[in-house]
Image (cartoon, rainbow, N blue to C red; front, top):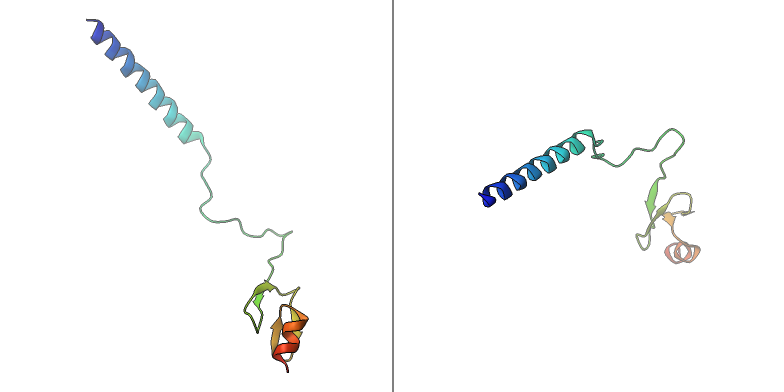
Length: 81
């Protein structure tokens, strides 16, 4: 008889736990599936590769040369000589 009472108590506890868990999952906001897109106040930065070493860097930091964009002045001089 005492095993039956213990079993009923365990089953009631599991039922309460699962019911509470379902409620939490239902009320939880969904996770975003994709990374956020740049908003109107944010601007996307274009990334370019150095023509000599293929290092990726923002276009605003790249140095223009006659054969492309470079990551440093030394690479620009080396590629253009």
